[in-house]
Structure formats: C-alpha cells, structure tokens
Image 1 (tube, rainbow, N blue to C red):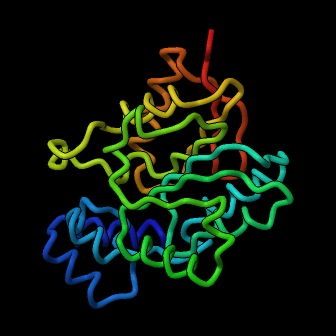
Image 2 (cartoon, rainbow, N blue to C red; image 1 turned 90 degrees about the horizontal axis):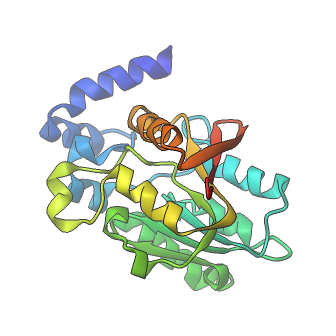
Length: 227
C-alpha cells in the first residue's frame, strides 16, 4: 500500500519534468524513469544503488544462475546499477560467465571503471558499455545463452527515436535473434515498466515467438520458439 502511494505521488510530480528534476535534486529518491526527468538529466544524474526492498531483480538473477548451475556461458544484462552486483558475484564462480552489460547512466559507468581499477579481475569476465540500449544492432552483438531484459518498458522514449534503432518490441526481437538454441530470456514482473513489458511478452507469446519455461520469484523465464 505504501509503495503504491509513493508511486502515485511520484507520477504526479514527474508529470512535469522541472518538478521531477527538483524532486530528485532535494531527495534521496532515484529518478527511476527517464520519461519523468528527461533523457539527458537521467543519464548524467541517475545512479541506482542496491536496494533489495525496492528492486531485487539483480539479486534474483544471481540466485537463478546459481540454482541452475549456469557457468561459463554468455550473458547479456540490461541495467547494471551502481552496485554491479551481477558482475561482482559472477567473478566468484568456479567458471565465470562472460557478461556483457549496458547502462545509460554515466555515474553507474564511472563506478564500474572505479571498481575495475582496484578489482582488476572484474573486467576479465564482466564488460559494461555506456549507451542507450535501443541503439544496439545485430552487428554489434554476439550470441547469448542468457539475456536479462528486466527494464523493458522503462527507457524507450519516442522523442529519442531519431537517435536509436529500436522500440521495446523490436529490441526484444533483436535479442531473440541473438539467443542460442536452448537459451533463456528473462523479464522482471515488478519493474515500473511492467505494464508495457507485459503487453510485449503477451504479443510475442501469441505470435508463437517465445514460450514460457518457468517463474523464479519475480522473474519470468522464456525460451525462443524455434519451431
């Protein structure tokens, strides 16, 4: 109930970008959606620390990988947070996965660089690029065994279309084309973009492009339908 109320208040405030920016500058709250504060403000000011009570998706991803003994595979991870917990936990595996991650936040990418300077093992298997995920193309990506798209629906902005290649639907299509046979694509049901993400997932399911494999806590796990 309290979380719902907080979201309602934020939605009212963030309907005006100047108010949203002021709200962020004087509070400890994170600007969860760039729609509220504007793309450039979000990229330069936003930094998401590890807050399991608000967003446990990265912790649940680590648990899922451990549960299924997923090691020595290729993983794409959408949204790193300044905590970079997915990469940090990965380096503790006997056979670490090769992880390519992306963040649109300058502070989060700067934190990755800072950590790598003192923890040089991190960059060996965990690479983080700074960019808008909607600018990616088939030629810029390898094939993956696991893809986490936890933040579908949160970041696409029509006003940014002249500078990108994708919307949410075509982005999912892109990563399906980069999924190895037997690979998995994961979504997060508690994201603030879930309303949009759910529609995309249902559309792809109805078209027979994906099939649900399982649920793990707040994560939905799908596979590509190759038939």
